[in-house]
Image (cartoon, rainbow, N blue to C red; front, side, top):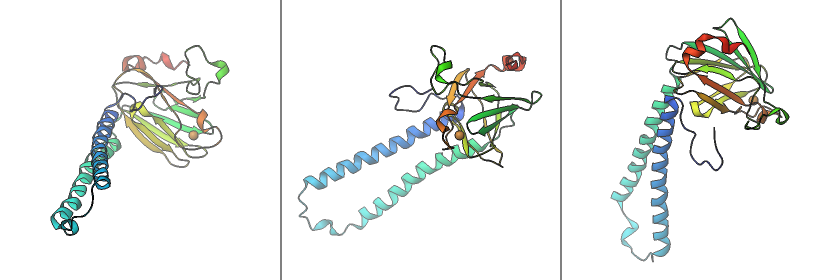
Amino acid sequence: MAHPVQLGLQDATSPIMEELIAFHDHAFMIVSLISFLVLYVLSSVLTTKLTSTNITDAQEMETIWTILPAIILVLIAMPSLRILYLTDEINNPSFTIKSIGHQWYWTYEYTDYGGLIFNSYMLPSLFLNPGDLRLLEVDNRVVLPIEAPVRMMITSQDVLHSWTIPTLGLKTDAIPGRLNQTTFTAMRPGVYYGQCSEICGANHSFMPIVAELIPLKIFEMGPVFTL
Ligand SMILES: [Cu+2]
């Protein structure tokens, strides 16, 4: 989860998020270089007496400063498109888990396990145990396996919601009447937090998502589902 005064992204738990972080760093480097160059040119312009008449015509320079930004844009667009299509890849998933957004809680359906369905509500502050995270803890966490491709089907029963877990690189809109799908392969076990990311009404801030990622062997054993 995010921690106070954090500036960067959360540590990655899936290969897609690794890619996204690498792309963020790549784009950030380009933006930084451009910013410093513009800052340098601006300060030069402000501190130089512009009296030369030789700079009224400079075809070569204009050609370069037209083509160079175009090349930079391509250098950003290409890796961006690559990740976009990687994110869309379904990868023959081993499990399908359905997540339904409601005002204001999530419902999870394990259709591969006899149609297990349960609701996941935020824990009110009064019910928190020491060490629990206020506004992030839920009564029933969604349990997911690691090191296996998992498909999430995401939909809504009332208004627009968005099912999000930043550390897995997931953010998929929950749209009434439409079934969206996304896949991920988690790489390490743990408890990961997310929040609804589509303004969905009065209690939008109070429908967190908590995913408990456990090793595949334990997931397959099943008793974890006796909630
Ligand atoms: Cu919502």
